[in-house]
Image 1: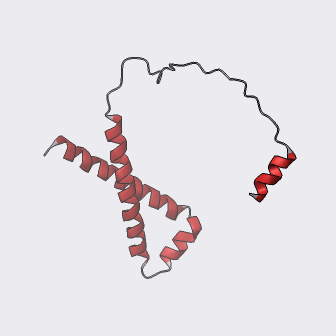
Image 2: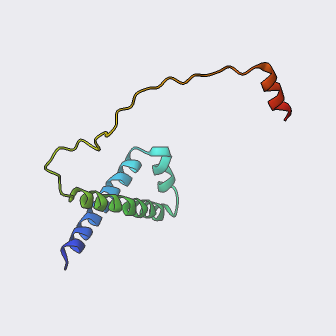
Image 3: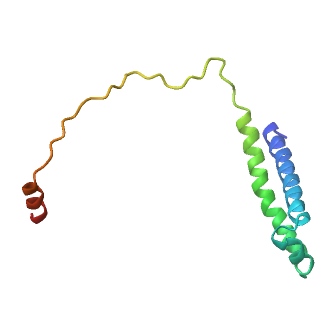
Length: 109
């Protein structure tokens, strides 16, 4: 089996394990009365399974993306960003006040 597939399967399992812990914490701390809703419903097990599965998909994707992005090679040199080629200096702009006649003619036109 290729290394990438092994890496993917490993991280999907880790993601679903994290999701299981997350759902267990939601139920343990009774967030939004979730434990009460699940324990008193006939479809509570289905709800917990779907909650775990959907969170597992998200956490597995994030886990795999994190590992892939962490594999990037680090640059050995300094990372200073783009150098500035120009220096900026403020310039003075003369502003002239317009007369009342000009303002009224602009409104009519």
